[in-house]
Amino acid sequence: MTVSQPKSILLIIGGGVAAYKALLLIRLLKARGVGVRAVVTAGGEQFVTPLSVGALSGEKVFTDLFDLTEEAEMGHIQLSRAADLVVVVPATADLMAKMAGGHADDLATTLLLATDKDVLIAPAMNVRMWDHAATQANLATLTARGVGVVGPDEGDMACGEYGPGRMAEPEAIFDAIMARLEGNGVPRDLAGKRIVVTSGPTHEPIDPVRYIANRSSGKQGNAIAAALAARGAEVVLVSGPVRLNPPAGVTVQGVETAREMLAATMAALPADAVICAAAVADYRVADAADQKLKKADGAGRSLTLVENPDILATVSVLPSGERPRLVVGFAAETQDVIAYASAKRERKGCDWIVANDVSQGVFGGDENRVTVIDDAGAEDWPRMGKDAVAEKLAERIARALA
Figure 1 (cartoon, rainbow, N blue to C red):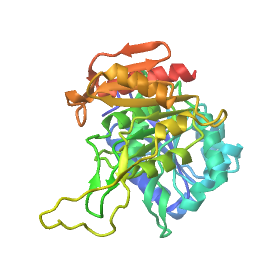
Figure 2 (cartoon, rainbow, N blue to C red):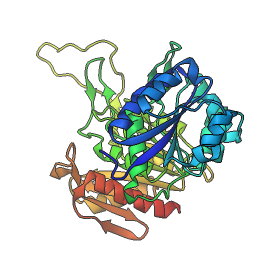
Figure 3 (tube, rainbow, N blue to C red):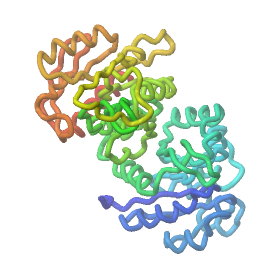
């Protein structure tokens, strides 16, 4: 996608080893016709040089707040407002703390405080730094102010540890930037809202080789997460095993089993809304084998199943002050869809149920036909693409949370 009209970003490169990915990001943006003017912090200069940044961007690179020549030619106030979007890559724990606290002790933080444009950050730090209460409080402050967040991902880190905190890949950051630059007329009416979305199937192990699962592809849940993020929400996507690229601007927590999905969902609270779009396995094997089970000679094998925790019901009945303002469940049915879905809503205690008839090839497909059931009754939507369903649902959620 090339932007329809010339756009430009101000790229602030923070002091982390992931700074090298900013060079790849610049190439992606320039190839799509986006202008890039860059600021490299003192820490960022330890990992990338202004010369390399300037060579790729084709623009002068700024580093010093008190450079008289730069102030005369541009000025930090003008620099903070000349671009269409300000992007921080990587956003270190220190930079996030300074942004949250309103510090302005170098060129980067002064620009961030002085800008009147949207800001998008790509956090990158050690897993313990990311999980620290101070960082999470700073993140909540920034998102409440409308700052967009892409990532971080979970994976191996330069420090040798593993977990959330690895910066999102340049392609994901690029997608988030392009979505913000183009906008496609989507209002940012969910800015400052935190929403948790569950998606995909769960895999319940029988032994190390086999598992119980269902046919869910995760396409609808991913589309919902993307549509909510496009409206400015801070989105946590708790996803079972799927073969999909993570949506841009969404924090993804990968899980496998229903119990892991419940734990990840509860850990992501508090939130303004929880959308339970995952097709969670109702049962798991009571005693999953730790070694591969062998065929019994000429005999069948019995498996004892126990009920999995009910994520939707658990979130729906949280006490006042802990329960999200809006809890939405999904009901995949093959017959008597409205009746079964309405009964499920009453039984679980959620606010809305999105019902769909999965007997018509919905699993794995690109289209869906749903009925949204709430206190007012049943609202039937025509068959449409899953992206369109997601956008329509996101609009409805935005109205409910306004």
